[in-house]
Structures are given as C-alpha cells and as structure tokens.
Length: 166
Image (tube, rainbow, N blue to C red; front, side, top):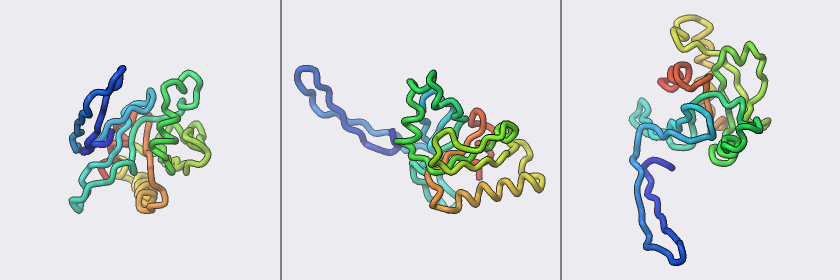
C-alpha cells in the first residue's frame, strides 16, 4: 500500500456491504513485502535536502534478490512484484561478494540495467576507491532514465543504509 493514500473496500458474501475506507499514514518510508526478500523499502516519502518529498515508486532499497527465480521462491511472488509492481530499470548491487562471484547481470531480468559497485559501509567514503564508487552511485541517481532504482547489499542494512543516507 502507498503511504498517505485513502483506500476503499467492500465485502461481498451473498450481498454487498457498505463501502468502507481507511487511510495510510504518510510516513518516512514504506516497508514492502516482496516475496521472502529481506528489508525491502520504498524510499519515497523521505524529505530531501531542499525539503521536498521523494516520490514513491522511484527508489527502493533492501536485501539481495539472487533467488527470486529459484523454483523454491517463485511461490513467494518476489519476481512478479519486482517486474510488474516495482518495474525496476536499474539494479545497483553494493555487495563485495557479488564482485568476487563475478556477477554480471541482475536477477530481476536481462532488461534491468545492472550496476555492480562494491561498497563498504564502514568508512567507505574515507578512501579514494570508496569516494569514486560513491560518485558512480550518485551519477546513476542523477540520471532520471535510470528510475525506478533498487539498490541493495546482502540484507539491506549497512551498505544500503549508508547510500540511503546520501
């Protein structure tokens, strides 16, 4: 559900009920259920440096989704949400271990722009390599053709938290 949105409902069991409604709170972030993936959030709703809110449905963060097409995980529906609801165009993979495993494409599909930019959450921007990688990441965000963007590490906490802060 989108935050800050009014939803309407009606129950039909033999006969229709009256129309009811509820509104979701306009929060700082929107946690999302994406199959059995960990810690997925829509960054929309957050206030940027100019005091404007980021639109929902453009920037997502979370954990890896390497197994979304694994038959054991398909029943959880992650691939469907990623492809049909989130409509990702860009996958920024921050995992150092993904570089070690020589990943070259997004598990979200061949049509997703995969950017493997290994990033260390702790002190990453205190050295030349970390600053160069941060610059690459921010350049991706600066190009509106890349949206919607999903950035992730293994569990969507430390490395994604560091990037989310920017």
